[in-house]
Length: 161
Ligand code: GDP
Ligand code: MG
Picture (cartoon, rainbow, N blue to C red):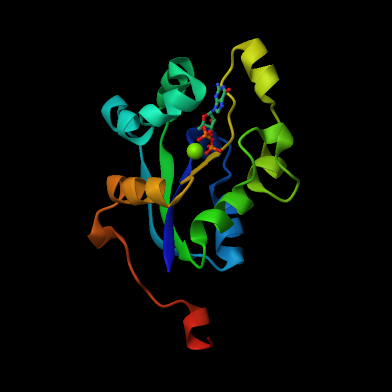
């Protein structure tokens, strides 16, 4: 089974959306293997948002992200399921909230566009980080969780399937 890393970014915590967001993942049938609240430091944030973010979006955006992710505590979790990385990204929605379809977390709980954010020079807060692909998940999961913090527990579904 595939695993992926999800973070509820500080805006999701500040806005009291933790429960609603976790429910979306649980309802999909993805299994939560690990879950915790952490307030990370700059050094850790740089390990999470690596150079590839600057290559895609520029150094300015990477620096803003490193600040954004440290504005408060985040909820970190590891989800497991068939095609978990892609399925999680589908539930999360698209990067820019205004483009994210209704029914996705970003589409339902945020709305700002990239253009608006850049014009107003505000961070495009989109509530969630989710590993983009297998390569990222393989780096991000061990960065955030020790093996002993991940629990291959049974869920109610295992008793029926
Ligand atoms: P994601 O995988 O959908 O989160 O998107 P990316 O990996 O491409 O970008 C990482 C994060 O950078 C996004 O979730 C946004 O928070 C932020 N981001 C992306 N593009 C921009 C931008 O043009 N301006 C700003 N300020 N932030 C951006
Ligand atoms: Mg990404």
